[in-house]
Image (tube, rainbow, N blue to C red; front, side, top):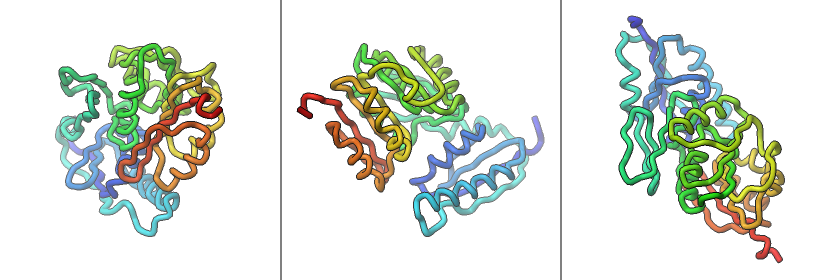
Length: 283
């Protein structure tokens, strides 16, 4: 064991915290702990470049969201005597219970009488704590049914695809990041489910129609993919759109007004919508 390690600490506004966590995971960081109202990142390797990257990321978010204040503060990097910080990191990750679905890590015990979803957070993609993922998990428990042909569009860690598979759906997944596909397939293996098809790319590479599509991606991408998404909906299909900041909700509703809005949810500033492709209602 090395004698020294590096510890990076910062405080970030709660509403943006998961964006920073996902950003760090995407860069291959495995040891992240939320504590003392802030975030600790630890590594045996120098974290100077990560510190710089976080500042740049914060600046871009400030510009994107048109903010007039800093969303990250108290950024500090120190060198410390080594200890078993991997175990400390594991203690900081909490499981998630959403109705009948229990999402937990590979080192946490399953919960009896619940649908258990086991996730390896070291695979660099989300562990289910984001508000948008929470909303999708609630909706999928309502709309996932056996034998439905389903697509997880922008699968990330594969949590949503795994849930649909647990409910008996024939699930396909896609993501523009090849690492996300690898992460999803590994998490599917951990949960004893299979995806019928997985590809690196978007919905334009999909074949045929789906009974259920979930897209937990940002609003701009949803707007770009709007026509492709609609073209792959079976009659009476369910479409779940999530990852939408409230300031974009009106634009999303306008673009999808030809579908029937049957449910919606907002947690903090994150919105999710459920649509039904009901042709009879349009006639």
